[in-house]
Image 1 (cartoon, rainbow, N blue to C red):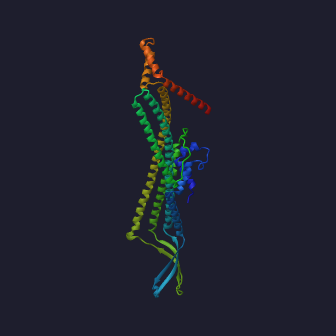
Image 2: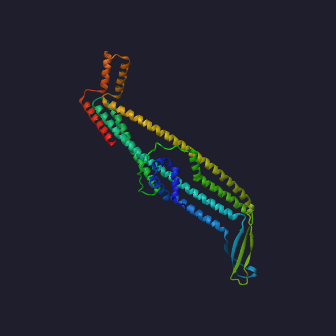
Image 3: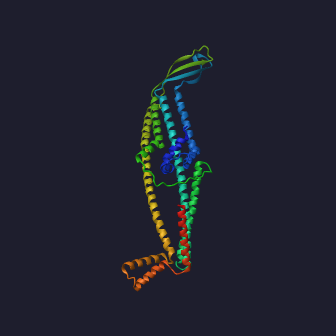
Length: 437
């Protein structure tokens, strides 16, 4: 039986190494990474892993039995009317195989191949469980982060609704804009509820994999923007070397090759040394000699069985090539998806920064006046035209400047109080930031 810890470390390297290497650099792998502990718990307790380990134990027992086929065999024989005597004659026979045409060696190789196939199947189960655990773990972390973002969005939408409500009360904006803001806030609230439900279901899936209701996820999962570039050739070589599917198919091909040798051995006689001792018969002497045994199948079917075994071996060898190609295709597809995801993440960071600047500018200008956003834009455009083409001292010029002033300033006490409150709030935020820095 293999130790679980090497498998957990191998699975980590295959499933999540490139995600977590920057985050755990300088720490003890297996002691500090929460995901590794979850993977170990899953592969140690999951029924499919236990079944695969039982298959390995059974294959190990079969291998030991095939190797003991070289030892002498003991049998008891009974016969009647032997040498003209009435009654039953019982004899103890011990037979030592001397030459079997390669049957015993082929049986051992077949058992060894079955054992290696069982080990590779165990690795397949471990890898599948590890990937499922990593997928559920990362999905849960992503959903929790999404919930945090949506909660922040709900707060921002609430501020927008409050601002829009004041503008509607002051008859600056139509009631339809308030209804639109409220509907968008409700949509955000619905998305929060959906994300929370999905996170709960993902946690349930993770707990089912681990077989424990007390499984919790507390470690933060941070995206590292300074990820090291991947050595595609080295990664591909390591993945193909570890690939349990390829190793299982190769072991099955070895089993098929041993089956060919086993079928060929039936074409030859078996020779062994035999010792025969008669029980309870004093007048019968013990016998010691060589025994040759040959048995052909019906219609010499053992000849055709050799050909069939060869075809199965060829099919198994081709299955190995197919498994290598499939794995290579999966790895290259995942690498392409990884590269695309990294680029999308970087583009997302840039888009988020730009959106934050636009939003901040919009909020400043939206709160500065009592006009609608299109009115503010029109006033800015008119002022720009006046600067390039108009005359400031003309009646039209004075009217456009007044339009610009009215877009950002109005002579109303409630509006002035709002600006004072916002100004004080911004100063407090700035002081808080300086103290915190």
